[in-house]
Structure formats: C-alpha cells, structure tokens
Length: 457
Length: 96
Image (cartoon, rainbow over all chains, first blue to last red; front, side, top):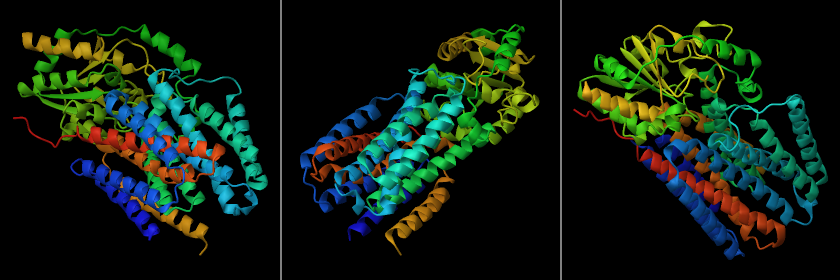
C-alpha cells in the first residue's frame, strides 16, 4: 500500500514537470509537484516507525525556515546562485542519508553487496554535487573569482584525486569500514571543489545544469540504498532534466562537455595579448541622445540582453525604454541566446519580472530572422553571444558557436561599461565595426538616460 | 526479479519519461524548470526523515538531522522560488 502511495507521489512529479512545459500551466505544475512532495513526506512520517520525533521536526523546521526565507528574499538577478545553493543542499542530503544508513548498522556484513555499492555511489555523487555547487555559488556571488582558476599540473592533481576517490570507493565497498566512508566523503568533497574551480563564469549555465543532473542521480542512488521507488523515479526525472539542459547549453556553445569542464575556457595568453592590441582600435562612441535619435527613427528594435543586464539590475529600465518606444509605434522584441546570463533561461526570468510578455522573447532562430530586418540592435551587457568571430574567424576559440547576428541590423548600439572582453576573454570585432556605436555606461543608467533623451526629442 | 533489477528498471524507464517530458519545455521556462526539478531532487527528504527518526542515536542521528535540514531547504526553497518566478510569467497581451 505504502509503495502505491509513493508511486502516486512520483506520478505527481511527472505530471508536474509536464505542466511546467507551458507558461499557462507551469504554476499549477509546480504546485502539483510540491503536493507530491508533501504527500511523500506525510506517508513517510506515518509509515516509518519514527522514534526521534523531536529531531525530525527540528530538521524540518530549521530547513523550512532557511529555505523559505532564502526563496522569498532572493533577487531575480541572483537566481543562478540560489539554484546552485539549493542544488548543493539536495546533493548533500542524499550523501548524508546514505552515510547515516551505513553508520547506523553495527554489523556491516549484513548489507547486500548492491547496497554498499549504492551507498558509496550516493556519498560520491552527493558530495561532489554539494561542494561543486557551493564553488559555483561562490563564483556567481563573486566570493570566488569567476575566471578559471588554474595552475600547472592541475589536470594531473585532479586526475589523481578522481582516481583515489574511485580507489577509496572500492575499499569502502569491499572492507565496509566506517573510516573508508568518511575518507570517501572527504575526498569527493575536495574533488567537487577542484573540478569546478577551473571552470569560467561564462560556462556556469553548463555547470549548473550538470550539477542539477547530479543532484538527481544522488537522490536516485539514495533511493536504491533505502529501496524507495519515489526516490529512484524523482531522482531519475531530475537527472534527465539536468542532462537535457546540459546538452542544450553545450550545443549553444558549440563545445563538447569535456571542453567546458576541463578546458579552463577563457584563459590562454594569446587571446589576452590580442585583446590588448584590439582595444587600441578606434570605436564610435555614442551618448544617450545619439541612442535616442537612432531609436526614434527605427521601425523595429531588437534588444539583446546579457549578463551585464543582470549585474546592472536593468530589467525594469529596459521595459521602461521598450514602453516608450512602443508608444511611438516601434516594434520591440528581445533576442535571447540560450547561454546569455549564468543559467538556462536566466534572461527570460529577468524580463518576466519586468512584465515583458514572453511571446516577445525570441529564440536564436527567430531572433536572427528578426535581426536581418531590424533597424537597431540594442545590446545590453551581452558580449560573446554576439561576437561575429564565432562565425567568421576560424582561429577564434569560440568559432562555430551559434551567435545572435546583430551585425545584420542596420545599426548596432552596444551598451557596456568598458571595452574589456567578456568572460570568455575574447575581443569582439563587433565593437570596432562601421555600423556599431559604443555607449559606455552602466546598462541601467544608460537606459534611464535614453528614456529621458527620447522624451526631449 | 531481484529488488536491484526492479530498481534499475524503474530508474531507466523514469529517465526515458523524464527526457520525453522535459525536452518539450520551451527555453523561456528553463530557469523555473531547473529550480522546480531541483526541488524534486529533494525527494531524498523521505530517506532523511527515516534516517533522523530511527532513534539509533549517535552520529547516524546527527547526520540524519543534517540530512532533513538540507533536504527541507532544497524542497521548501526550491518550490517557493519556482512559484515566485512563475508568478511573473505573464500571458501574452497586446498593450494597445
């Protein structure tokens, strides 16, 4: 009976995820999944012979308050950090469940072989997810430098650590001592840290997706440990969701996953020096008045948001400018590159917060069709995703990455704080092109000034 | 069939279901999808509650408590933040 009730909860997850597929049903889908989760917890509280009620309730209250406060307070611009942190907590919970299950039993020879294997797997995946997620969190928050942190011999050190994690895992499975599991947890925690440190900030959409997938796999592994199908199914669903997003992100970067994870992308001395020489080239500077004039003569304006928009918290200012333009009968659309920002869909959430209707947000193909006929492409804090060298320069490290072809628009205006290259560390020939005007400013300030300038025309 | 084989069967089938369901989610909803899925990975709370409530005492119970707290952060925070985000997604409307 209990098994069937757990299955019903798992079904709620599947239906919930399915309803997350359309903006109209998504809210209900999320609630349905949450109801499934509540059901699963209630079933467990009733069915299991809980002895330490105090401990269980204390854990639920502490976690509920911390999670609830964080969820209500977080700014939409900080969503990638938030998701990374929640991810980490999910991963560590699965590792702790497995570890606790092992330590609880005195006679470890009573465990079936497959049980100790899945305990070791839960600890391994869960710990990597935990520490990896918190390094990602630190990078996104700016607590850890966002650039790839590398040192000579890093791959060798990481490889050795990974090999020893596997070795200790085998030891833990064969010898079944508490010590082996503690060491396994320790090594895999370190492994999670050193694996994410060399990955650059711009690659975070991939990393977060992958860690999301791992947190699901950790839950599945824990499900094998305690023989619970709700965990196995729920974990598998999350594992596949994260995997799909990971593949979509690497596709949008045109780089294999191995390159994202181990390529320490965004360093390399050659790009650094060429960046310096390129920056000496002249650019056409624009002011708020120049931008206002260009916009007022336009019929179609495409706004291209990037991570800079999130940093500047400029989503509401963007909407205000779009409103002013729409009042004059100008068509305004938004071109969203899949890897713009720091997590999949990051820009969509920010613009949704500013009440931009989601049908005005164009994906890569739609956006490029729109850009071909657009009068002005207004780039707000995006860089690598509009870099034409990805299309034209076969020597470029990002060559082959699908880009938003903003240079097909009549006029390109780039709002950016400085000429510094993006997170990929690659200079952008777009900035020096004939049809491009550079508006050096914080995105929010620039947009507010432009709205004023428009009104004064 | 042994419980292990049944478990693996369930895992593989659920993965296929997940891929089928999730590959249809449009890019605009990728962030809520991720945070919603993230909350679902907190299903490990079921194991955590069991581990914490066993009354075995000692380190196993301490770990159980930590597991419950961490999983609850994941579940409550994840579903709440997803709800907050989805509340902002408007139906397309023409202003004029």
